[in-house]
Image 1 (cartoon, rainbow, N blue to C red):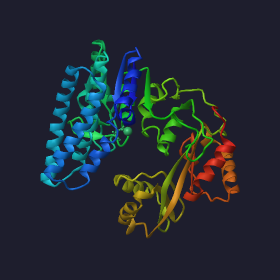
Image 2: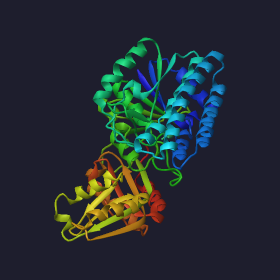
Image 3: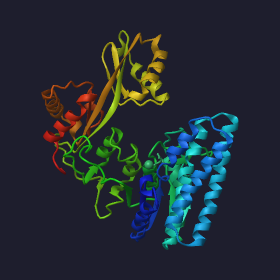
Image 4: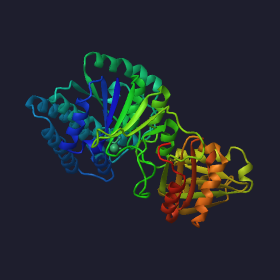
Amino acid sequence: MKVLKFGGSSLKDGPSMKKVGAIIAADDEEKVVVVSAIQGVTDSLIEFMSEVRQEEDVQRFIRELRDRHVQILADVAGSMYVKQQAVNLLSEKLVRLERTLYGITYLEELTPRTKDLVQSFGERMSVIVLSAMLQDMGVNAVPVEADELGIITDGQFGSATVDMEATRRNVAPRIADMLARNEVPVVTGFFGRTPEGVITLFGRNGTDYSASVIANAADARSLEIWKDVDGFMSADPKMVPEAVPISALTYEEAAELSYFGAKVLHPRTVEPAKERGTVVKVRNVFKPEYEGTAIGDIEAVKDGMTIKSISSMPNMAMVKAYGPGLGSRSGILSEISVLLSDAGINVYAAATSQTCISMLIEERDLRFAEKVLSKARSSVVDRIETMRGLALLCLVGEGLGQKTGIAGKVFSIVAANGTNVSLISAGASTTALTFTVRREDLELTARTIHRQLFRPDS
Ligand code: ASP
Ligand code: MG
């Protein structure tokens, strides 16, 4: 059994959806399909909630959503019967969404809980359209909603984590039953529910993670994540023109790249797959003959000197908290990290000295981080400094973090460009070496490192 995931960009219109249908129909193995919302739908739901709306705005918005889905449905399904059934199902979803949006309008109140619920409707509708097309093609597809299937989360709105054990207990028997009836479940990505039934999202692009969770829960042999790119590359080709596609990565390598800026997979996708040794393949819908990138327990060169890929985050900032003896007071770093993470701010790297704790965060979080840290101020922190305009580079390759030699080599290469490096966190994992440079030095640094340290497919 395998799990196939398709993203919103592969479902943007009739022709794209037909490509997806051809890939599913050509595969005669037992399978579960997991999908995102149709391209742009999640964005439009978020956008709609970002302003105060009137009743007529809700009606207009619901009409637009209906038209968009019915249009694609008309392009992909021929049978009147299949189409009518799908339209009925879509209407049920739209009525529920409409009432929820009226609720927001009348109450003039929008909680994180409601925000997550509203966004789940993109996927609740896309599975209906895709299933209808597949039924029309003779595939016994059945739309399934993740909350009904029993994907259980920890309840963290906007960035939930799955309770794998509880999820497995719910999902494994249901999927097995459906496969035994020769059905192809088409499951909504992006969200799950708490044990009490509250909808929670996995964060933007969370369908990758959903697919990996379902692959784990249903004991899939493999997980294919179908995108509109060739898989992972040795660097961002917009920045490094010589970048080439990568045919294989270890779980750790893929996890580090995803966490540090490679936008191919949701950052946590590999976790559930790795737990059960499921091979993940990242493939291109528009080039189905191409193998893409395989992620698994592969034999990797662990010479600690070979870089497989470079990822980067161009919009970073540093926040530095100063206070006497800050670095030697145990627990302060974790106290400060907790303050930030409770505020939903990710710390990508941290370094401490006797008088200062430096933390690397995304620039868009900087203002908020300053505000949050000023809470800690009276007790231990007496001054906060910030630095904008930074970029984070992440070099990935098995064994990299264990060798001191590589850091020296990288920094002499970077220094030869006249670039300053700060905040190294080579210790964070054995697979990744991360450091920051000024944003204007990012491209040149990435290109130079790629030219000197990258070895094709090692
Ligand atoms: N539809 C959601 C988003 O746009 C989830 C996903 O695409 O995976 O982020
Ligand atoms: Mg998406």
